[in-house]
Amino acid sequence: SEQGLVHMPSNISFEEASTLPCAALTAWNALYGLSDNQVTAGQWVLTQGTGGVSIFALQFAKAAGARVIATTGSDDKVETLRKLGADHIINYKTNPEWGAEAKKITGGRGVDHVVEVAGPRSMAQSLNAIKISGVITIIGFVGGFTKDQPGFIDCLNHLCTARGILVGSRTQMEDMCRAIEGNPDKLRPVVDKKTFKLENLKEAYEYQWSGQHFGKVVVEIA
Image (cartoon, rainbow, N blue to C red; front, side, top):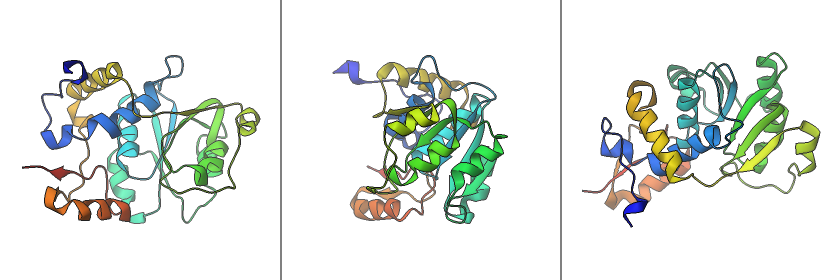
C-alpha cells in the first residue's frame, strides 16, 4: 500500500536512508514517543553501546540540546563517541557499576532517559542511573538474558517508568525525516565504514554479531 511509504530525506544517500525505518525510528520513539515526557534541552540521556539505535539516540539527544552519557565496552570507540557529541563516556567492562557512576555525573539527580538496548543484564544499572519520574525505554536484549533481573516492583522503588517499544509509527517517522532533512550535519545517519554485498550477507551478520561495527551495517543490493 502507498500508505506504507514515507519520503526519505532528500539530502542523504540511499545507504544512509536505509538505516532509518528501524534503528533511527526506534531511537526517535524512545526520546519523543511519550507526548508528556519528550527529551528537551538540558536533560540527561544515557545510551548503551555503539549500535545503530544507540548512535541515533545520541545524535537526536544532542540535536535537542540534551547532555549524553554513553556507555561502551571498547576504549577504541571512545573518541568516535566523543566526536558525535557524547558528553561523558563510561566503559561498562571496567566499571560494572556504571549506573551509579552515571547518576554521580548528573550530580546525584539521575538521568531523564535511558535508551535500554542491552536488556535484562543491564536493567539494574539503568534503574540505578534513572532519576525520579525518569523513563527507561526497553528496546532490545543484545546483552543476553538472565533469570536474575529486576521486577515490576523496582519501577515503584525507583519511581520511574519502564516502557517497551517496537520501532514507531509512520507519523513519528515523518517527523524524524523532517528533522534529519533540516539538520543533516548533526543528524546524518552513521554507517559503518565496512559495507557488504548481498552475496556476503552471512559475513555481514557475523560482523555485526562480533560487535566490531559502529553505527549501522549496510548491505548493498545492486
